[in-house]
Each structure stands twice: as C-alpha cells, then as structure tokens.
Image (cartoon, rainbow, N blue to C red):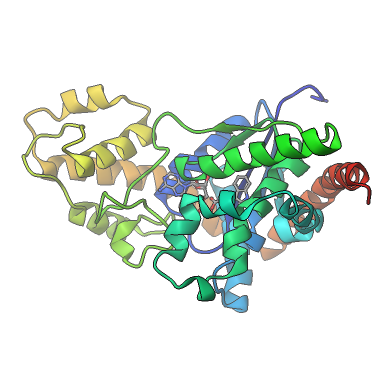
Length: 330
Ligand code: AMP
Ligand code: TRP
C-alpha cells in the first residue's frame, strides 16, 4: 500500500517537556501529514545527550515525549514512531558523513553558536558540535522527501542537503535530496516573557514557555504575565514583537488570520485579548492532556509502540547504510 507516497521524516529531542512552540512548529504538522504521507517520526535521544542529561530522568523523558506525540494524535498504525538509539544505523551513517563534513560548515551553524554561546572552545562537547551531522544521517537514512520542522532547523536540513550532494558527487548517487517543510504560521514561536528569544525547552525561566502539560491555572498565569509592547492596540508588526507572537499563537491554534484577529480585538485592551488567548490555549490542550492521562495508565503500550516502530525503521535505515558503505568502498 502507498509505495508511491512521499516520505516525511522528523525528530524531536527528548531533552525536556514539549511546549507550545514544539506543538505549533512541529507536532501539529505531523498529525496533518500522517494521512497522506509515509511518515517516520522519532525521539532524538542521541541528540538529547549532546548536553548533560540525568540517565534516570532521560529514560522517563523519552517515554513521556512518546506519550505526548500519541496524545496529540499521532497514530502508530499510520506513522513509524521510534527511538533514534534503537536504530544503530543513525550512529553509523553519522560517522560516515563525518568524514565528508567540514569544521567550517559546522562552525557556521547558528544553533551550535547559540548552545555553545560564550563557552570556551575547550569545554564545548564534540557531540554538540557534530549534532547536525547526526541529524543529516537521520534524514538521509530514510530517503526522506520532506522534513517538517520549525524554522530553527532549516539550516541543519540545508546541511543535510549539502552533505547528500557531496556524497552523491564523490561516491555515486546514494541519497535522496530532502526538502525542509516549515509552517507558514508559527515556525518560530517566541518566549512569552521575552519575544527576542525563541520558546524553548532549555530557557532558564519557566515564563518563557507554555508546556503542553501545564495546568489551566498555570497557563492562565503565564499568559497574563506575558510581556506586551508599548501602545495598547492588538496589532501585529515589527514594532510589536510581543503582541505579534501572541497573535501568532492564537492564529495557529484557531486557524484564523492575523487580520481577522486584529479586527476582532480592535478597540479592546491587552487584558481582554490575553483572556481570549488563554481560553484558546486551554481549550487546545485540554483534550490532549486528557488523552495523555489515559496513556500514562498503560506504560506497556509505549514499549510496544517503540518496539514496533524500531522494527519497521531498522530495515529501511540498514538498506541505505549498506548502500553508503558499499559506495565508499567499505
Ligand atoms: P526540539 O525541542 O528542539 O527538539 O524541537 C522539536 C521540533 O519543534 C523541531 O521541529 C523544532 O523546529 C520545533 N520547535 C522548537 N522550538 C520551536 C519554537 N519556538 N517555535 C516553533 N517551532 C519550534
Ligand atoms: N535537531 C532537531 C531539533 O532540535 C531534532 C532532530 C534530530 C531532527 N534529528 C532530526 C529534526 C531529523 C528533523 C529531522 O529540533
């Protein structure tokens, strides 16, 4: 069935609780794509360990990220949902690609610059530096046509394309060229307490993000404390980064346009707008949280889903890895 369907692949790190940026930028797309595409979605645990993780907490976190994908509507009968470290071909192809990647191109990666930010080179982990090469391996192993992610991953996907092209040129056509797939609205959700930084799992302040497991009270508090801009209109624009971000969140969750929302809130104040936004977020997350609570009652189910996913992913990845080794003379 569906052998000519396009293939979609994406990964989400298991380094913390998923937040509204992950949902709007990535997870929601997966749910939409699973009907018409051959989807491979994985928990990027090998990427998560590029920054220090507590082993016990990581193990728990991996399961909770899987459960959250299921709760958001990912159907393991339609999607191959697996854990990156269960398929050893990721690490192996990562190594092969290391031999054609250059220090120069990795040093240009903005995520590396952000994450390593300010630290002396001697103390920055090699894994953090090499992270995009492993990501290229993730993508190329599955001959992905499309890679849905938020804006922050676009540069990494472009590196995967560069490495694929270089490899194919040197060793003969082996890899398919992937394309990034970045949502038109919500590709970069910013921090609620600081619209100049992105919403992220690793931001120090909890006020930066709304986690998908936040209670109604917490959501209302975070939205009411979200920073706003000078002036009182509910209008998007470069001079209003905070309000633009809040409008973007509301647009993404309601499938309405910025213009429609600006019209609805014309003449109204921030308080009224924030209350409506909090209602929207609560309504979007409530059914997800209810499903999550059900899923968490059955921990065996996650194990089954992951085992099934790894079994489906492995042969696909191993075929590409074998072709790459063969092409290189190994
Ligand atoms: P990560 O949490 O870094 O593993 O990201 C998982 C997915 O969510 C990737 O596709 C990211 O591009 C996306 N993502 C992460 N943060 C944001 C954000 N603030 N806005 C939109 N998408 C995001
Ligand atoms: N680097 C991605 C992130 O932080 C996660 C990821 C790892 C990924 N491998 C991938 C995304 C392959 C898309 C394709 O969000």
